[in-house]
Length: 122
Image (cartoon, rainbow, N blue to C red; front, side, top):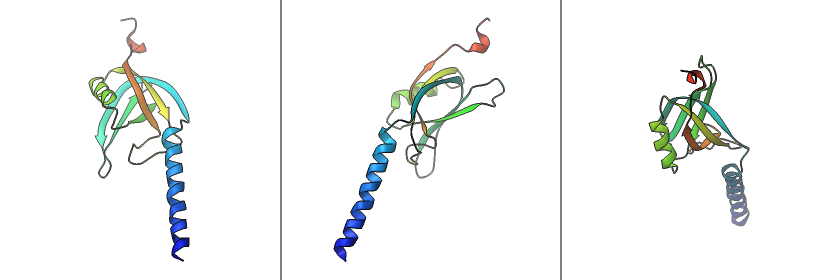
C-alpha cells in the first residue's frame, strides 16, 4: 500500500513539474504593444508581483494589462522611469497564469519610450 501511495504522489509531482515547465518556458505568442503607461506597481499580499497597464486609445477604453517578473530588474527600473509616457512594450504571452509570477499571461521582455502618435505634428 505504501508503494502505491508513493507512486501516486511521485506521478502527481512529475505532472505538476511538466505542467510548470511547459507554461513557464513555452510561449503562446510574442508581440509588441504601444500606449501610454498609466499604471505600474508592486502589488500582492502573499506573492508580490509587478503589474502594469498601458492605455492604447484616446479615451482609455483599450487597456492592456501586463506583468513583469521580479528577476527583470532592468525592465522594472525602466518602466518606473517611463511612468506617464508613451511606451512600446515587447511581451511574451504564456499559455496560463502562474500566480506567484504575475496576475496576467502577458510578461514584458523589453520596454522603450516611443513618440506619441497624438502629438507628432506639434
